[in-house]
Length: 379
Image (cartoon, rainbow, N blue to C red; front, side):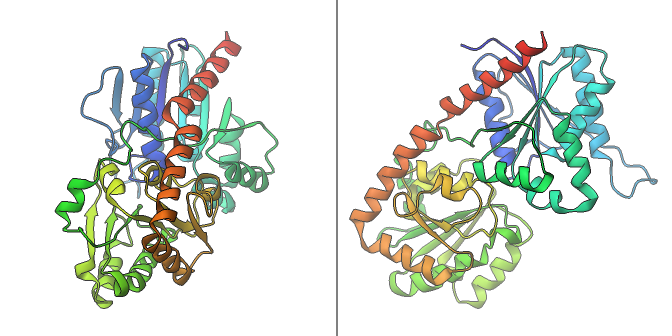
């Protein structure tokens, strides 16, 4: 087992992949006897109320009339600095460059304790959106340069980081992961019974319902498939596009075919129950939900964007299409529904690939080795 470390993790608490990965990583590290301190402005969706070895620090932000927006970054830097001085953290793992890597740097500069090493994991939009904004580019570049290790969750994102920032420093590619004890193919029977889905195909989509996830495209796919099969669609998550999706479902006459589950902690039984998982995003640095569905034995139909082709193999564990090709996606869904041999082959291959390439144990060990190398280099 790797040496025990004291690790601070700063992340967003939202339903997207970065918050999920940061939380799951913290839980796994604490289970391996590391001391973990997790910082966020709200409790992340997958963080239990109590977990031995993991300490949650809710960062409170005071409102002052002078500030139009509460200064979360300053409050986070202060919370990190306090824990650095009191607990002597070895590592601060910042998930997203903005603001977390910068807050980690400020905290380290203010701290009177031993020098913590900063690991910054990039998850996508801090590079693909903020990194292209002149207002943020140099700030993000500074955060990367002050980090002791920069991690990207896919080779595609690493290439984007080098291109956007002309960044020549070392980048570790450490993919997201899935816990096979929780995401497995034998969990779905109760969900199918509750949805009265016996004899009806079940499709699923999970996201934070931002426009770049193109959640309305799932309705276009469903519209084609439901005419032939009476299929149902489960939508998991919340976000700015959710009400628009509800309205579109009514307008298309699909209200009885769509179930809105909102943000739920345990998505594995739903993925396990589904026949096909749909992910029509226009941008995706990795595709964590697609990986979790695949680990549950559910074939994936998605767009061939960003890091998704590194997770879902076209023609082996799922079908990949250009952005907006809802007709092609619907054809792929029908192909999987009508050909059980193909569906079973994709299911088996997806489970096997998830276990071999993206297991929690494998990726956790990579993180532990990285932390240990940084701590040893500073001693």
